[in-house]
Amino acid sequence: MSISDLLSSVKQGKLLNKDEAIALLNLDYKSQDFYNLLSTANYMSRTEFDNKGLVFAQIGINAEPCSINCKFCSMGQDHYSLPVTWRKNIDELLSELELLIADGINDFFLMTTADYPFSDFFQISKVIRKHLPDNIRFVANIGDFNLETAKKLKDIGFTGAYHINRLREGIDTTIKSETRINTLNVIRAVDLDLYYCVEPIGPEHSYDELVTEMLRARDYNVKVMAVMRRIPVPSTPLYEKGQIPAIELTKIAAVTRLVTLPKRAMNAHEVTQMTLLTGVNQLYAEYGANPRDTASQTEKSRGFSVRQAWDMLWEAGYGVSK
Ligand code: SF4
Image (cartoon, rainbow, N blue to C red; front, side, top):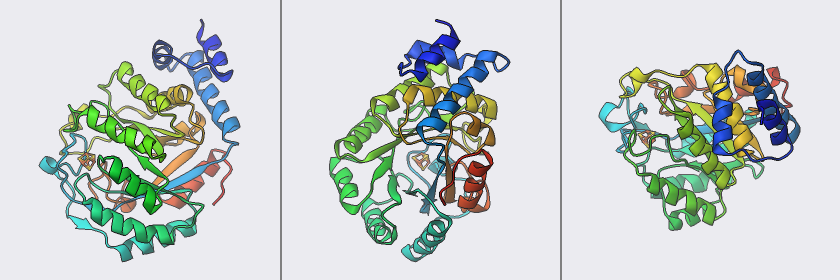
């Protein structure tokens, strides 16, 4: 089947298989087919998502050396590169949350490093939940957990969890894929929405590896999908591997959108305008600690603000509902 016929059949509901997805990832940037790919992903998002843009905000609530020691993360304990360590208290979090709500967000994420005690996280989350309007979804981005913890998250009022099997899990991280997959399964078991991402993508990853994660997301029926390129953080072990250019991230976002068919939103991170032409309708604003940043308040460095995110969606012609 030609690429043009393949893309037409996706619009009509065909599910892409691994070989087909890899063929799309191999398209040359100079070819007409490449732009047909971007156009198909763009068309599907704009029609299926009613041309609606979404902004999610995440606060990283602690900056501390993390024992999982991911080779790309500024907070890995063997190469910790933030200038300080801290944990935000509930008062700080509530004042930040108030500002985010005022600027208009659709989903709110609380992120911790993997060693942050669950009991402290539960305490903070219960208070946050009381201050979060019901129309804003509440998402946990924490270390691996079991069924009991998943139930607890649900009881507190979380609506979803961000969790992934990272690229080269167990090689570039110290977590086994089985552990990640157990967590994905308990998220599904308690009916929390799973937020998934192909990440952190570097120049060394094969298309086969990327598509494996796309197909995993589709198997879990993910409604909010994302792709993220790795930011080479100085002092991290993977720094020398560099990063992929925005046009490559754009292509990967397009293929991911077509393979995973998310029902609610598609994201590419970190924020780049180019990806908004290929089906990305959702952006993340980031505050506090961030594995891709050496500044401990990412909102003053790499992090995008809620207002910047809404402005960029507007620039791309998305309806904004802030
Ligand atoms: S990416 Fe997350 S799990 Fe890995 S070292 Fe950083 S904080 Fe820990």
